[in-house]
Image (tube, rainbow, N blue to C red; front, side, top):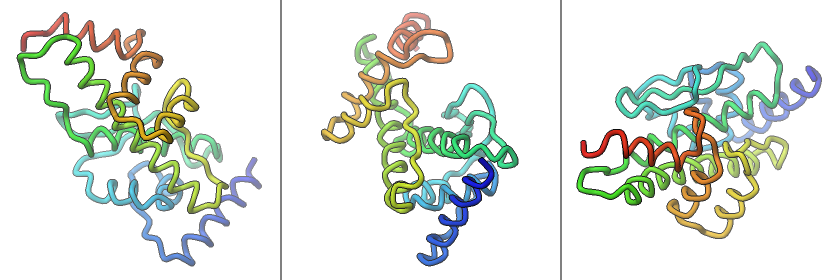
Length: 198
């Protein structure tokens, strides 16, 4: 595994050096910075993101502090898939920040609230997909960043078909578990029931 890691990092280093890419500082470790630099979109977002990028569970974007949390990982582990997964989470959570908080001002129905929140998830999946495509293209398919979803193939199909954030978000929310132990659709519905009107 260490040989594979060194080979991939050396190949990426040579490619980045030849194309004069600037390495972003993610705050998540030099190995994450290094691979992230293969995506101009994610690198650019990291360079202007005004808050911290931290390790912590559950992975999330905090709309109040603007902090981004991704599952714990250490560059010292030499876990290549772990680097890729970390960048997948980073690109997903940056997607929430880039698109901004959804407008959930009252009045709105539960269906409208859930659709807006799920469209926000769709935007995060889209950002994750952009980062994935850029890293893959830059490394000529050597590095594949995962889509953060239970069924990445359905997300990739929707992204490839030109689906809207609403369509992508609905699929994501209906099929992916929230850290609260239910689907995102059920979580947003129950959040509405417990908190509306605000």
